[in-house]
Structure formats: C-alpha cells, structure tokens
Amino acid sequence: GAGVSQTPSNKVTEKGKYVELRCDPISGHTALYWYRQSLGQGPEFLIYFQGTGAADDSGLPNDRFFAVRPEGSVSTLKIQRTERGDSAVYLCASSLSPTSEQYFGPGTRLTVT
Amino acid sequence: KQEVTQIPAALSVPEGENLVLNCSFTDSAIYNLQWFRQDPGKGLTSLLLIQSSQREQTSGRLNASLDKSSGRSTLYIAASQPGDSATYLCAVRTSGTYKYIFGTGTRLKVLA
Image 1: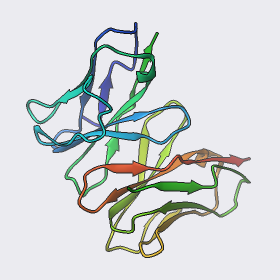
Image 2: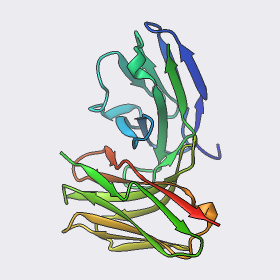
Image 3: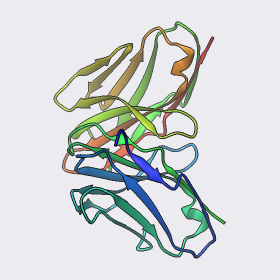
C-alpha cells in the first residue's frame, strides 16, 4: 500500500472488554513498531517486531497487552480486560529495516468507558 | 535510562522568521535520531533521520544537526510559513536497543 494503515480509526469499548487493533505496514517493511500516545505527550514505545518475531516487547505495560505479527506483515495489538487508563491513541509505524526511517499510520483512538 | 527533552514546549513566531527547535538526550550512545511533525489529530510525518555518524541532514527549508557529545540536536526551520504550524517531535534510538524514546514535542504556531 501507499502508507501505513490502521483500523479501526476509533474504538469505544466498555471497561473489562477485549479489543484488537490492526496495523497494515508498508509493503516490504520488515520492521514494525507499536506506540501509545496520551494527550500532550510524545509517543511511548510498546513493542518492536523484526519480521514475525517480537524483538523487543519491553514497553508493554502489563500482561493484558499482547501483539502478534504471524506472517511478517499485518500486526494486531490485543488488549484484554481493558481499563480506563488504556484510553489513548495507539500508533503503528514501519520501516524498511531497523536502521531506516519510521513511517507512521494515522493511529487508532481507543476510549474505554 | 534514556530521557529526551524538548525546549521550548511552545513557540509562536511571525511568518518569515527563521527558528530553532531543541532536543536534548541524556545518553549520548545513540544509534540515530529522527525528527517528526504531527498535525492535530493526525499521525506523525517523518522529517529527517540522522544516523549517529552524521552531523547534519537537510531537506528543503529544514536542517537538523546532531552533537552526540553534548546530547543535543537542533531542528532549524528557515523562512517559516503558516503551514509549518504543528507539533515537532524528536525521537532517539539508543545503541543496543530497538526502541525509540520520544520527547514531548514543541508546539509551533506561525502567524500570517
């Protein structure tokens, strides 16, 4: 595709529910990142994939958060038992390699009520 | 632990002015540094990427410099335009890691 796409653009869910957020990276990009951004803050790193494997998941806040990239392209961020504090914009970025420029998607705004 | 600071937090300038945005980082062992702009409610747009071996990068009216020893990068915007109004973010990747640490950004407003 022309750029990184993320779906849905907005997600409203009730506290305690499960959500999945999807990221379609630029075709051929092997590196994929997930970030979370709260209002007035810079993005906060969550997880990095090189190909199919999570090379660095040190930013995941707790075991309610999990991400997969089974075929090395599309990635899904999964959040179990959502809490109000999970409300934020979730951003995905991809790059050709770990050393090259990151390209960001438009983000998914998650609101937990 | 790498920490990234951006000063000023907000800046308002008249159109046509040259300006400098600052980014400081605490661990000078970096792999690279990337500057982004973010428009309200949008994702991030990459502006410039500087590898640790480079001193500066230029793209159009933008010039970014890197001084690893002092833990600083500056983004220079020449002849600012109202369309430059956005939040500018810098992100640092520390050597030996894959994660990028972002500053909180500088909100720039260029007045017509």
